[in-house]
Length: 81
Image (cartoon, rainbow, N blue to C red; front, side, top):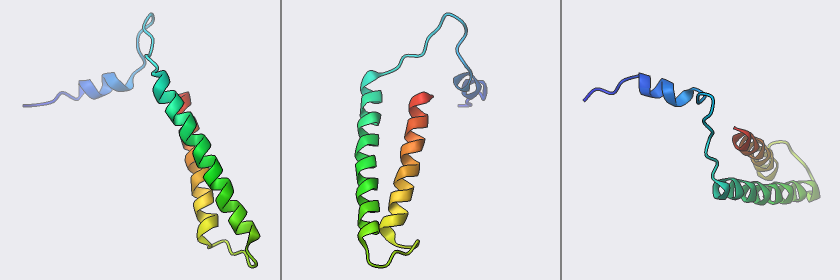
């Protein structure tokens, strides 16, 4: 069975005028809750890193906090799309 490549192009295009995207409010709410939890986790990890006697940029809490904040920005971008 052959799959046409036109199917993938249609999915990536904007809908014609008069059509709207269906936005699932439960999905949006779950993404917002996930962002809030990740923000608290990132702040906690940065707090642990700031309380350390010696701070290195290669410490695991610092690196995890930075990656969590990047993930929060990416999830916020997902909500906008």
